[in-house]
Structure formats: structure tokens, C-alpha cells
Image 1: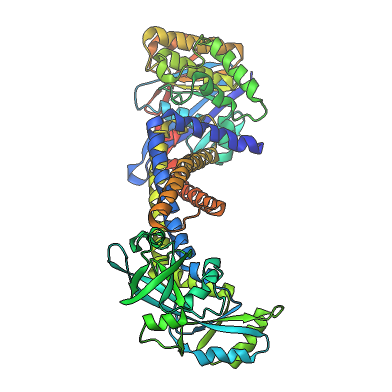
Image 2 (image 1 turned 180 degrees about the horizontal axis):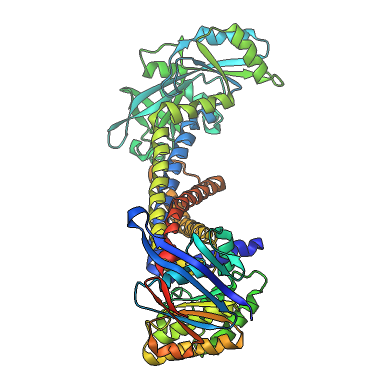
Length: 225
Length: 389
């Protein structure tokens, strides 16, 4: 198995000078291909910050963060944009584009890829939506869907580009127990089929059972690996 | 990336976001429409001004024109001596030289007896210095004492002259001097005069009792066929006194136009109005684009996290600006078309809407929306996924 995410001695802090607020302290973790890792921990423990660094959304300066063999520490925007295209992101809120239908929302992931034809994009987006059980909701806008359905659209959106990594930030936070469980099980099932690595931040203990490994973060320090 | 995809996808997203919120779209279109109509009308009035200002010189039939250097424009000339004009006959290329006398005078409406100022042209009825057939045909009648021709395109406040002539009511007063209207011609009003009357040089002196034959306002020179106007112009320039301008036909027209554009504040006023329309539209479109970006901040940040680069969002904003420009321009153009017709029928001013003006205004709208987009894209940096999630 190959290492997909390799983090060594990552330090990160907000602010500067006397106001410096360390968020991540000497974090070291490596995640293998196809692994499902859950990061838990109380609010303010730096979970989301860690996730945005791995996702190439936040620039870190100290330590080493290698994602898909790209070094993110002090990297250029160009490198991170390229890396983001291979990462599927699932947000706490569904974050769908409200003016687009489910199908169009899922297609947005594929529009970065110029190699596909418009027809191929539609077909792949539709297949993905069928796979998440929304085959009869292709042309519905987000405001016409329930919370669980929206989150399933956003799972479809994250998976349709066949990413190497899925990063999920509290994907069940806005869902009730049943639809939350459905959503993560769906995610797990689809990810296992395609050997996709999942890094999931949550403090929803009801979904710990899907993980291969649970990592707890507290005050920016990894407690147990 | 293929260029079509480079622009097509952001444009399609911009379009979908625009049509999603119909209320905001209508408001945005109204903003551009307003700016569009404002610019159309300002340019229309300005061009009508130029066209009408030059309407009298356009109808003059001559190759070269003599005017005092101190004359700002044809409607307020500085007089010079007729002998100065006659000197040009010494040049062998000159065939004829005739004076033109101009004067503003009150004209009495035959029906209401109210007085309103119009422009009186006096010319030698032996000459053909107007390119207007109706005047040429009536030259014999104009030789009679106290006869004038009336411009049918004068403002209606002077009275319905055609009906009055048919009813044999043709006697009125110009400058408190009794004259008989013996016919009609068509010239058109300008910002300088609401109406026009043409008469013989002799009758002109009777109407303006203080004027005399020796002090002329404009000299109209005709050359022998085949003579080069510019060569004769150069030759005359060295022969004549310094206080006269020698214009070719085109130079006379542009001299008149420049007066209204630059010397008179009117050209500036309409230019200013045009710029204001542009600025108002700019502010409206900027506001719309700016709030649009603010409202879609979350969505843009999401797309950024998915791997879209900054340039994509810049293209989305400019595509929105482009759509607003086009969508606002179309109804703006149609509305202006109607307003132009209304202005023409109400104000008796020529208000043509040539294709050139339509493209000019469209370019104006495009530049306005482009500028608004340029100002609004600064807001894009707020869409930072790291701060959002």
C-alpha cells in the first residue's frame, strides 16, 4: 500500500507576535491508499484547520505536508489548485450551488476536466446521482431537496471526479441520525469500491464504526494513533 | 484548456446564476436600460444639434466661402466689406462671387400676432447660392418689393403657413416691416433659429433699415469647372486681407460644427450628460455585481475548494457584466428608438439613429459593464475557502 497523505511535524498557528495562537502542534500522521480515517476531538482542537491544510486551502509554513506526493509547505497556488482537483471535498453544510440543479451541481466537478464531452459529463453525473439514490431527482434544485438528499448530492459531487482522496468536514452535522448514517455508509461503500482514501472530521460518535482508524485531536496534539 | 471551454463554462454558470434570481435580474436590466437610454438621448440631442447647426451651410451652393475671422459661427457673423469679396474675382479660376446677408428678426405670426425671432437670409436673386429648388424657382417673385419665402420646417409657433397661404393670408411683419410671403421652402430649424425666411438682398435692406449693401456676412464663391478649390484657396489666402477666413465647403461645415461642439457650452453639456449616464450605469452595474459576488461568496469558495482557479471566477463576473450589457441594451435601444421618433415629431429636430450610433452606444455599454466588472472582482478575494469552512 502506498502512502497518500504524509504529514510530519506540522505546526500551524493563527495570528502573529504576542497574539500567536498555536492550533496544530507537531502533528505527524500518514494515511494509506483506501484507508478511512476519522479525526475526532472537541471544538477548537484544530480538526478543520488540519483538514483545510490537507485540502490545499490553507498555506502552512512549518513541517512537511505531502499529499499525493506534492509538498504543500510553502508551495505555489498552482500546485495546490492541481492537487485540489484530485481531492473531493464534502462540507458541513451541503454547499451546493443553489441556482443549479442536482445534475448541474454534480457536473461542476467534471467541468474542470476539458477532456470529457458535455454528453459524457451528463452521463457520469447522472450515474453518480443514481448511485447515491437520487436518480429521480436529477433536475431538482437544492431548495427542492431535503437535507439528507442535499448531502447525498454533495457526496455525489465529491465522488464523481474519481478523486484519490475525499476530505469531509462534519458531513453529518446538519443531518438527523438516520440520514447521517445513510450518508456516511453510502460514502464508505462508494469509496471502498474505488479504493478512495477518506479523511473525515467529525465529533458525531454515531458514525465511528465506519472508520478503519480513529485519530483524536486535542488542543492541536494527536492523542492516539 | 480549449478556448471555448475557457469561456463557455464560466459564462454558462454566470447565466444560470443571473436567470435564477429573476427579480434581481430585472432590476439589473433596468439599471443598464436607464444608462443606455440616457446615453442614447444625450448623443441624439448632440447630433441633432450638430446636424441642424450645419443645416443652413449644407444647403449653400458654393466652392469657397469668405467669412470674417472674428465670426464665431454663421448665425452671429462679424460683417466685412463687400469689396473684399469682389477682390476674389481677380483670380481667373473664380467664376462668380455673391454676398449673403444674415439677420435675426422677430416674425409676426399671422394668426396669433405673437412675435418670435427667426433667421432672415438676404441674397441676390440673380445668383443660385442655395441648393434648394423651391428657392430657385421663386427667384423672379423675390425680385418684387417686400416679398419673402418662408421655411416650412420652421417651428409651428410661426403659424401654419401652408394653410394660411392657401387662404390668401400672406401678409405679415418681420422686424416691424410689412412683407408678403410668396412661397415656401424647406430648410429646418437649428439651435440658433426657430425658423428661416429667405428674401432678396434689396428686401433684406428694407427689413433691416440700418444694414447696407457694403457690409456683408458671408461671401459665396463659385469656381470655373475643373478648378481645384484647395489651390484657389491657397492663392486667395495670399491675395486677400488677413481678417477673412477662406473656407472650402467641408471646412465651413466643420467650422460650424466645432462652434457648437466646443465654443458654445451646448456640446459640452451633452458630452457631460453622456459621461454622467455612463457613470450612473457603472455604479448600478457595479453594485449589482458586487452584491452578487457577496451573495455567491460561499458558492465560489466551494468551487475553489473543488479546484477551480481564480481566473474562472473573474470570467464568471465578466460574463455576468457582458450579459447585463446585452440584456439592458436591447430594451434600451428599442425604447430610445421610440423616444427618438417622439423627439423628432415634438421638437422638429432631425434625430436620425444610424447604425454607427447604435454600435457606439453598445460599445459604451460594454465598456461601462467591463469597468464595473473590473471594480467588482476585488470582492472575489473574500471568497476564501479557508476562512469559510
